[in-house]
Picture 1 (tube, rainbow, N blue to C red):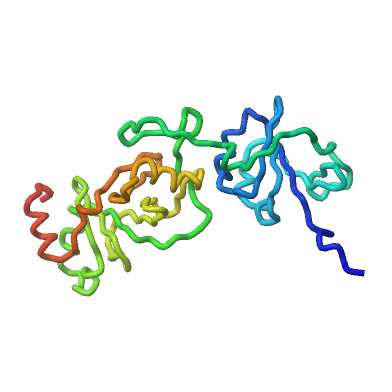
Picture 2: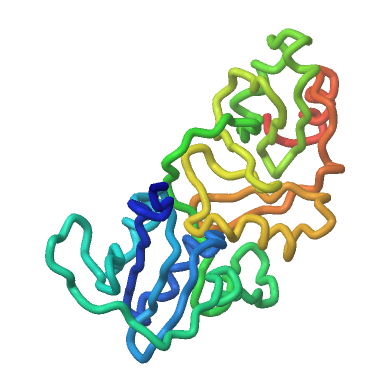
Length: 247
């Protein structure tokens, strides 16, 4: 007799208070997850095995994960059920139910709705750096000493008294490094608190994809036009340096 393929497949449910539902923005892009609400509780189901043990879930406040067995909800590794499965709930895909709306842009400070703010947090993954922001005063003597084959692979733009270098391999210069996600330049070691905001922010603030959005750890950003970048060379650097009063 053939073995039932569904045997051994776990089905996960979860709940958290409605007061904490804003934190679900961190998993809004998990399109397989379904969400429903009652008076006091947000219910979720449909997690994969990998999602059920992910750090994204573990960091959610007051979040409780269950395994569904025979219509009963068990906490992880529990032998006794905690409660019965809820019925008569209206389920929706989480990415449709948690719709994010944008306010008008407020210079470099903005949020998505009044409830969800754009924040950066230390990330769990390593990403290769593709950009470097350096003080021109600190590097003005180092650029002429760089070999031409390294300069040829780099573009650069001036931001106030700093130089933003773009390209790999990066130059061995003092400064702050950045990696890229969806056209954003994020400080190395940081990522958006809600990763699904990345593409949404591009749609709202960089629809023409003609800018880099350069982020600070405090959640503010600076748009840098791509047309402002030019090939790096000793002559272009010296010419720019002479037009400024950095010395």
